[in-house]
Amino acid sequence: MGWRKPEDITLKVGEILKPKGIDFIHEAAKQVDPDASRVLTANREIPYDYLVISTGPYLSFDEIPGLGTEKGYTDCTFTLDHAVKTNLSWKKILAEPGPIVLGSAQGVSCFGPSYELAFEMDAELRKRKMRHKTPILYLTSEPYLGHMGVGGLGKSKRFFEDEFAERDIKPIVNQAIEEVTPGEIRLKDGTKLPFKLAMIAPPFRGVPAVAPLGNPRGFIPVDKNYRHVKYPNIFAVGVTMAIAPPEPTPVPTGVPKTGFMTVTMAKTAAATITSEIKNEPLPTPEELSVICLMDMGNTAAYMKAIPVLPPRQESVLKGGIHYKWLKAAFERYFLWKMKYGLSNLP
Ligand SMILES: Cc1cc2nc3c(=O)[nH]c(=O)nc-3n(C[C@H](O)[C@H](O)[C@H](O)COP(=O)(O)OP(=O)(O)OC[C@H]3O[C@@H](n4cnc5c(N)ncnc54)[C@H](O)[C@@H]3O)c2cc1C
Image (tube, rainbow, N blue to C red):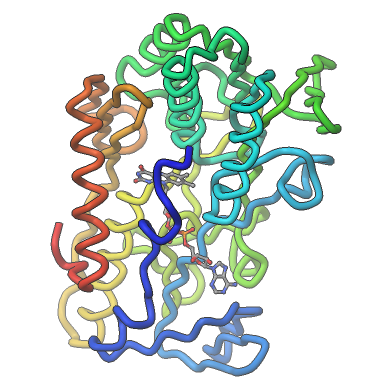
């Protein structure tokens, strides 16, 4: 939306890690050789006693013709570069209004950001008195609004349906994309959706360097301590690890691994490795849960799910402007915490 500049939300990782005695090698891993315990980059071979993989998603634009920011016709906000480019498309919409399509293709496992963008664009267009010139359509592979890859969360279905109705955002659910051509998305059922700006999250896979260690989509199978099921000195945390969906959905969707969940996984993996090195009993992993603050432009929502997948002990979804203030405060706290390497803080 242009509400943050890249330098506001970017940290110099190498400088943060150095005082802790951690070397930062800014190179792409090309391959892992698990039998020889080494990682290969273009320039070197890095041997390891333990390897923790946290390479996130490979954004698989190529699976859908015409999808994507480089070879295709759609935008994305899933990397900083993509987000900066989407901002240029947004500025064009503000200059020359036209239809917007937002949402998630088949095989996505991160739905929150697309909902956030729909609400943010709606709020901003209303503020500029341009909303009536700019139809917003929300296209998703989820079987219903608010499913989010986790079988819904509390009253999420009703909550999103009501918000979309009030904001005049048209939902199209349970759909897969056949192809994208300039200015048009064609769905598998033949429907054609014209657009001037389309932000479509692509299917997720594991990144090529580590995909051979994973399942057919390249996500890495791990045990409850995030240890690879076959290689005991390899751990995988975050988006790169495999979680089975709570239920099969008619159009494929994946379980999101949020930042909050990723931190929990990383702490468990780190505690497991240090316990093993010290010959101490392994830690009991903390149950994965969701705590999310979703920006909605002029307001926000708080989501909590314990555990991540149903049936749950607790699930909460509440809206309110104070959650927007809380999200802004959390952003400052989180960046401060990371800048000073205080990852042991909550
Ligand atoms: C727009 C957006 C908004 C989000 N908002 C929230 C939120 O409000 N709350 C929340 O909890 N979560 C949120 N998430 C999800 C959160 O960002 C992810 O859960 C989290 O970043 C996952 O961490 P990760 O380490 O698995 O992957 P990433 O953060 O994607 O990190 C992977 C890293 O590995 C690097 N890498 C990849 N391949 C290689 C290679 N071959 N060699 C070397 N390095 C490599 C990448 O460059 C990257 O730096 C959001 C996600 C998006 C896209």
